[in-house]
Amino acid sequence: MRSVIVIALLALAAGFLAPRYFSNIGAAPAPASPQAHPAAPAPAADARARTVVVARDGRGHFDVEGRVNGRRIGFVVDTGASVIALTAHDAARLGIHPSRNAFIAEVKTANGTVRAAPAKLDVVEIGGLELRDVSALVLPDEALSDNLLGLSFLSRLHRFEYSDGKLVLEQ
Image 1 (cartoon, rainbow, N blue to C red):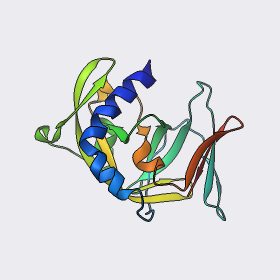
Image 2: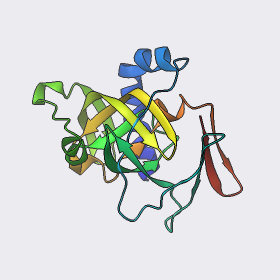
Image 3: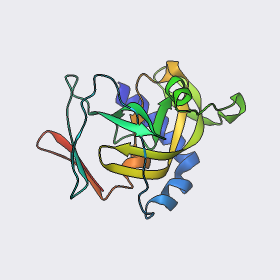
Image 4: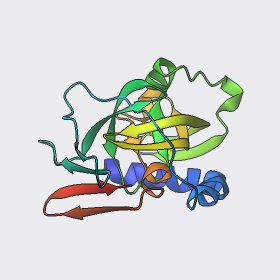
């Protein structure tokens, strides 16, 4: 059910933010810093290939720790999400405080339609993978239970794939 909500949310946001994302697909990756869930294991990184391998957690999800703008934050990897989606609480911890007028993107969730605020993350890092200027959306806390690592990060990698029960991210 959560996946359906996330996909609907991100499909709406994609229509609003797609031109920016597609212009970044060919861009060179830049450093980034996501923050992690306290219980999320650190992904295994291979410095030579700049590859991160993420195992499933007990719920069957791919939780990763990272850094956004130098601060630790946790994400659930969501290949169905068009963008990185942040809870308002975690966005505030990152120093992102959108005004009420900034919530201009409409997204559909299981709880109905909510407004989200577009944001740009200076640096997002997962393991040894770093990207700069990554698009995101800030959602009200009640609309999102976990931060989502979506395609605004994943699509700028060399590749990401599900293999042998693990998620492989390569820059």
